[in-house]
Length: 127
Image (cartoon, rainbow, N blue to C red):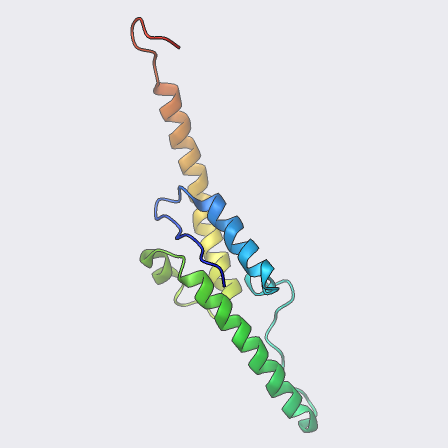
């Protein structure tokens, strides 16, 4: 897997982080575990004769899920990691993270806007 820079606790690098984690997982063909588009945990078969195939499919799914889990969690600050420990899948973790940091993005934008509004040119300063 690729090395992804850590998400900053104040969310300054959220947009870049979000894209980099998606690209890293997409490069390995496992981004569906992040967005839950396709990678759902396989269901047990009704026919006991298909149990061997199911167990192989489940093992492959779990390996990919844990790889995505490891890739995502190693790029998070500890306080964010604490907030997602209850999640049962990588997709659940990602949903929690997106919800938190997307709401912070609006606050960061408002703070940045207020900061720019308060800027003044010094007396006899050169714009």
